[in-house]
Image (cartoon, rainbow, N blue to C red; front, side, top):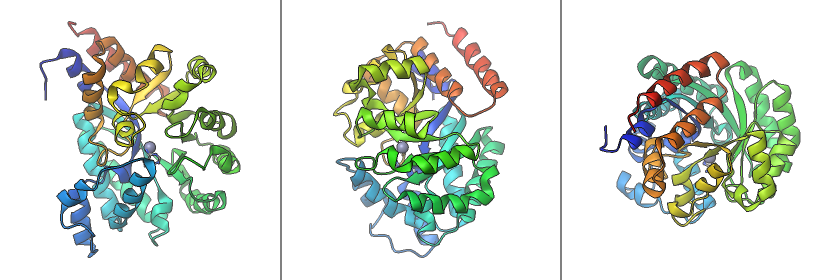
Length: 342
Ligand code: ADE
Ligand code: ZN
């Protein structure tokens, strides 16, 4: 819906990619209750309002505890399809043309749900989302870093028969105490399979965790990375090498990484020339989808259209889509930007 602010309208409607969104984190309380009912699961909350009231997080771990508990309602291929389709419908409203979606298979296989069930459900939702909204989607398997590297290898063995349907690998879950170094061999294997790798780093963890993700895991993008600002040498390197950061502003506020949006390191990262992209992380839990993140950031920083153009362009360039596809999207973005009368 148009606002009375042309810069915000441009930021919201221009073509962009979302590169950091956990599909399990898009499970809205209403859908969680519907799936619990469909699957005959007793849910420890009386209604969706009571569940939403529990979204009061002190840090990453307090969020993850609830996030894994809620994922228990996801049981069948149809559940994963419905989840994906609900997200893509929201994504369309925010101008998203392409999305690279994280999922956590270990959360599901630990409950006896096969990797194939999860994959087929997500693919069905993505195919329907593409037909209905024109959005292209890619799937990134994330390893849970609170588990061991051996457990990661066991997961990878289950993924390998479907490897052509997976576009990359990531690393998520509890960051503190689980540095990237723990997964060096696993990520070498993922790269040997010909897949790009990414990792959460510098969300709660220090800059050293970002160095490890770059040097040991050899990631193509850093997820979050907002604590890079504490290390001037790292800032220079990220700028020089144009390593994309998938920043998630509302997530950082909800998980108390920053007290308020005005104190976020986003302006510093941008001013230093880093390749920043904006994303929603776990939109059902953190107060909104990409558009809500854009509104919150604009309310705090009042950026000009050029900055929003740069952020959208970064997201398209940092995606794993083909060069031709990127050029096509960027031409559309340029056209919209050049027709702006601000
Ligand atoms: N899994 C889902 N959301 C996450 C986040 N923000 N950080 C780490 N792991 C996650
Ligand atoms: Zn994340």
